[in-house]
Image 1: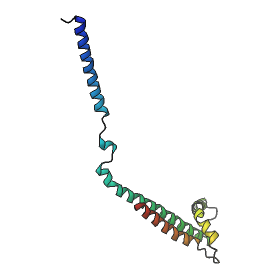
Image 2: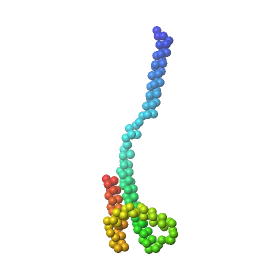
Image 3: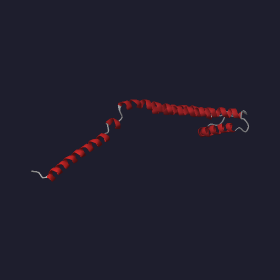
Amino acid sequence: METFAGVIAARLRERSRDLSQRWLERLNDILTVEPNDIFPTDDLLDHIPQLIEQIADYVQALFRVYVLILIAYIVANLFFGFGGRIPYSGWSRAILDFLREVSEPVLAPFRRVIPPLGPLDLSPMIAIILLGIVGNVIANLIRG
């Protein structure tokens, strides 16, 4: 015959194991990580070529925008060179300063190498051609 204290101790041990088991099951349910949560699924892997293509298109678009800025710089210099500037105009000065600050870092190395042919400066044309080639090469390298 078991004593009262022995019966209570056995029940407490059983309840403790039961309670521990329930808590472990709850924690397991909360902390369970599905393999698809860690490793990419096939759906995600199917989108990687599209992502690479979009990155390549973005890089190519950046080069195109820079070429457009160079063209705008050339046109603005021609316009302002022929007296098209409005006297004391802050906005025209701001536009020309912006275009100069963005364009000159690329054009300066070409101007050092290529001498001007009288009033004709070939460095922007060569820079535009090289930027187009470099942009296409980098985009194609990204695409693989």
